Image (cartoon, rainbow, N blue to C red; front, side, top):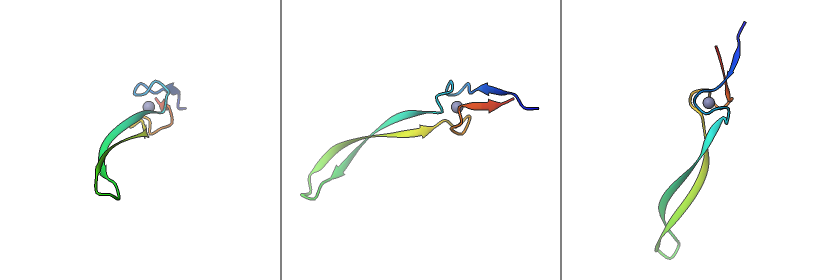
Length: 53
Ligand SMILES: [Zn+2]
């Protein structure tokens, strides 16, 4: 019988929002700094927020 426990890796948040900074070239050939945020699922629980123990 598995018992679920709040994931110690993310504290139940299921992942973290990360921000990525890149430089892209726009159609005019100028380089523009671009900031993107993306969701990174927790690797400990696989994005479920809980782990089996
Ligand atoms: Zn987790």
